[in-house]
Image 1 (tube, rainbow, N blue to C red):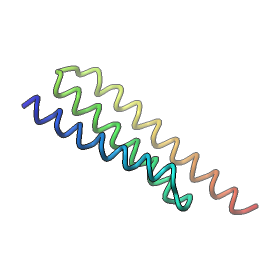
Image 2: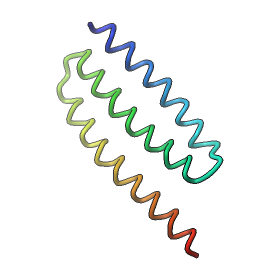
Image 3: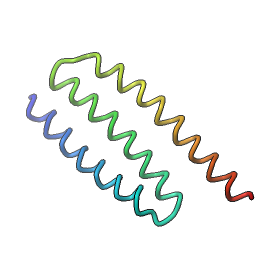
Length: 87
């Protein structure tokens, strides 16, 4: 079963690489924000899968902290984008 968790984590890492390309290239600010959200969500999922694969429950706590940080970062990016469009 460990091989399955690791294969799923590898697939998510590839998805994160594609999301990083979207963050770098754009073309719009909305695409970049969605790319950042994808990186956060996939990173949390990778941590949870690695925690299950290696029987490390502490990684679930780290994933919860990353979930909070991802939500705050997307809210900050959205607010920054909205204030820049108003000016």
